[in-house]
Length: 305
Image (cartoon, rainbow, N blue to C red; front, top):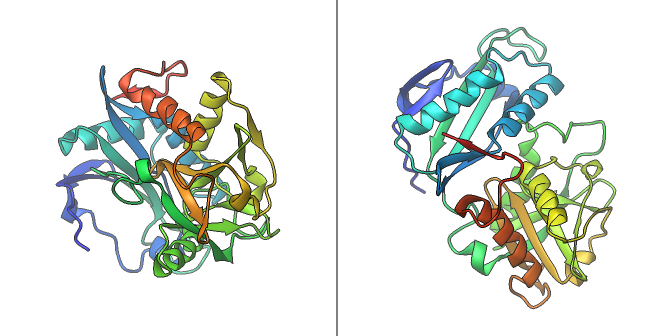
């Protein structure tokens, strides 16, 4: 698979050529997964390019670093400006941004003292799970891999090592011919997708799993809950057994990369009508309407580049 890389990247306070942003092979983060990161999107809007919930994403980055006792060398306003600068440096009209902080080269032990290095990349990215998925939906499967149990790995942190679990779920799904995998929590109840939160539609209401189900409290998830409640769509956070994936009327995944991706079948069983339903379409309209002006940005979520 070929990947087209951008020309420039922000690395430890400086915009530099992409190829110059290097990491030593003995860096702590490479060996132990000791990194925290974010995925952020910017969109073209009638008022110019805007980054969606930039400040909220960066606050979560710092929260993840706090959980893992990782000192951050820059403050939020500095990183916010760096995000804008790297978009401009690459001439992007809309972008996917990846800020990452990681333990760099220092001592070699698990608890060794190391510097915290920080980079921000920006590139153009279309629909994460493939072309046309926002319209047609995907076929998903329940993974044989479960999410981590409480008080083992903190699901509330968006950390590099945490995503080894997601890799197992996603790669298994691809190997079996599915678009994405869905993981159960250690309780056997629903958790989330490999890297996305879940929403089920039952009798016109949204149902989503709680953060206690070993999932990341997604910013897109929070945005959907907020938009739904403001527009008369009931939203319930509750424990959900696996079989409701087969019984619900509609089903979709959400996340910064996945945006709002409908799911048309699970484990080969058709969900509802086997295509995106009216509630899913309404949620998509409300969400994407933020970027073309159809949905008022009453929360100040759009931050100009």
